Amino acid sequence: MFFASSKSLVLCLFFFNIFYLCGQAFSEPQQGNSNSVLDIHHSAFKKYIISASALKVQLSQDTKNVLVDIRPRSQFEKCRIGGSINIPLYSIKTKGFLKNRHVVIVPNGYKLLTPLMECSRLETQGFKNIQILYGGIQAWVNIGGKVEGKPNSISAFYYMPALDIFEERQSNDWIVLDFTSNPFTTKRLFPQWKALYIGKPHKSLYTLIAYIKQKIVPLDNGQRRFLAVLNEPAKRGQKNVLAALTQLNINNFFITDVTPKKFKAFLKQQTRIAEAKNHLNIKRQRMREMGGRGRCGCGL
Image 1 (tube, rainbow, N blue to C red):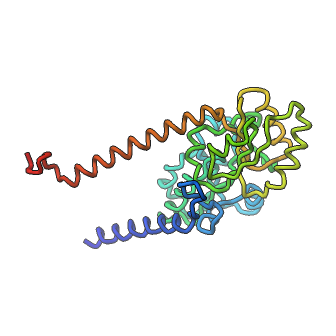
Image 2: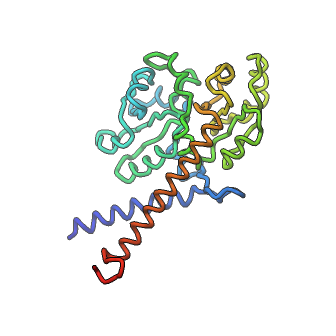
Image 3: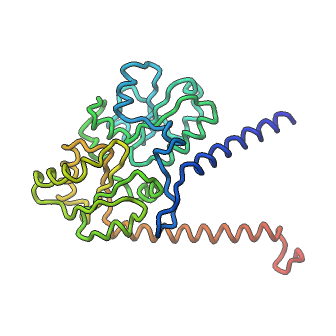
């Protein structure tokens, strides 16, 4: 009886912690946008985030740090921070030896909400000091951090899939760099994010670098992530944008791996999936309320 009560108490405390964090960190919805926006740098989540520069200092002083790279094994083998270990995010809770260590999670950089929620859960399970490397391994490379494997392969990790863009839509730390021909494109696709319209990439890389240096560098305070959106991501313009952002050491930048047109179609697909799930949940709820009785309500 005591064991069951203790278990219930632990579960209650866990869910209270999750709801409290979410309630504290969610800001009011923006006008014209029904989705709430999560303040990544709110005090409720700030303790879980560490910058690449701060981590570099810590690694030179503290031997208790354990870098846990949660990226797919294939990416980890191509390029990784020296001394890091590869463990899937949801397997960390099974590694008891990490509870008394300072654990730094190394993500892909563009996916932050899921690791943040998992950090909160791990804390309730006895992990005393756990943080996430803001910007992921890309941020580490941008500050000159040493990596093992093939450093040239890091450029492939800057491309952000449509599904991850969709899952990150409630984060408030993104700035969209609009390299399309229509300034209203990103405002319609990303109404909850700040957008900076730049226009089609300049033919000259030198001109593009000068423009980005003037417009984007002042916004790069280490607490922002940048998403470059192009009409034709597979062509020359994308390479110039990647080269310019890299040369200027812009922190935490990524590029969409789909065109706005394809992403719009993807959003419609996700909306249909969400509506279907909602319809199914309503149907299941009605069946539970009926208590398994027949349509006439008499149990036949």
